[in-house]
Length: 276
Image 1: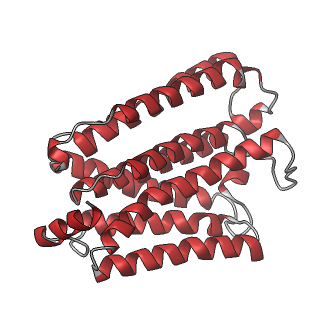
Image 2 (image 1 turned 180 degrees about the vertical axis):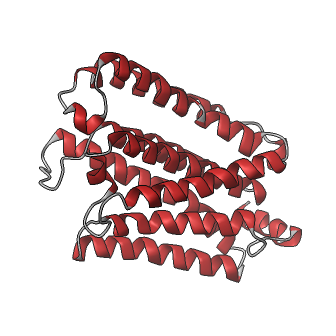
């Protein structure tokens, strides 16, 4: 069934309703009484906490709307195209600009966030928005749908909201601390789940024997593997941390806004036959 004729699964609505409810409870009844220094969180008063909770919950509430509009709405026109292009470019520009607030070969985004907490919150919000919406747009342009891919992207996008609300433990990480574990768990789930949403699509396209998608899958997979190897051998820094994000931005731009990876109708029918 073509995406233009498909209906949005209730599973996505339920998933996001649970995510938003859990987030609201966590922020209002647990994080409201946290003991993290205000200089590291940017939350200087109870009123600021309430305003940020409402704003961030609203940002999360828009994600199921993106699914509805981009994946199951009417055929995307110029408005949708330029919305996705604009937030893709802005997201990439923002995370790159933010990463150079300090030496990126020494400081990660989380470590920079200890000094610039509100910039870090926007880093997480813009990164999740731009990658998620453009992954959905990539699916729609190729008349593709994967529940696993959408669910992975949804969980990943929500996970980063844990990371941006719980500040890093700094350079002296205590791996047994709840603060450290929740912060890094959110970051890792964001990275791998959002990457999974892209990889699932690339694997499906590669199954059609499309050489360009096979090459794209190979390169993207190699970059993800290189990041893991560098994290183990070199250690974490802003450049290593940003490698997969930059790769995702380049990949999404190439697939969504250039003709390099455009698939003709014959190839699309062949892919449907393979995945049926």
